[in-house]
Amino acid sequence: MEFGSIEREIYVEATPEVVFEVVSSPEHIRGWWPDEASYAPVPGADGVISFGDTSERLTVVDVQPPKVFRFRWTHGPGEVAAAGNSLLVTFELSPSGAGTLLRMTETGFRERGWEAATVEQCYRDHVTGWDHFLPRIAPYTASLHLQP
Image 1 (cartoon, helix red, strand yellow):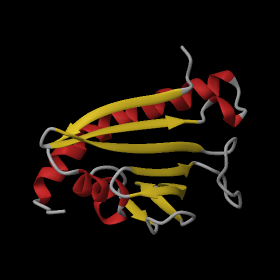
Image 2 (cartoon, rainbow, N blue to C red):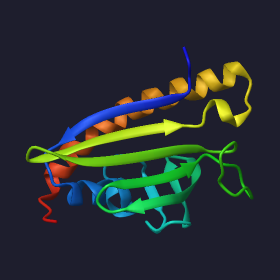
Image 3 (cartoon, rainbow, N blue to C red):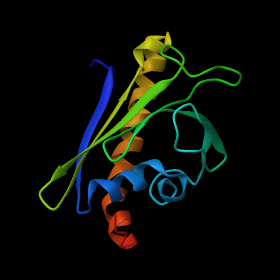
Image 4 (cartoon, rainbow, N blue to C red):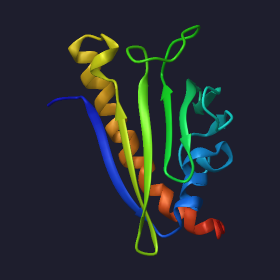
């Protein structure tokens, strides 16, 4: 197995503008992914997301409403997020019928310089996590009744 990237696609019955808000704003991201999220959805903003007692640093990399939201996460304390010390998550949105095709990609596992077993474990943990959390986006979005 390569352990290079995780890629998932889901269809959401909402406009790209609405789905973009759901995957980029801390208020909405808390509805389907972490327990807590604190960051500004602007390039260069640093923040934190938390899952129970575990917190991860996050740095927003790219914001192109309603098409792309990209961030780096899992970098260590005192480190500036960059290739080689963090994972890169990209949400790409495109109109599809009456809704949105959402493509999520997470990369950077091998670039971390970890031992092979650590890369494999982190990759598998993130596959399990995304497979659990991404399917929650569509029902969460449907519950909002947002307009673009």
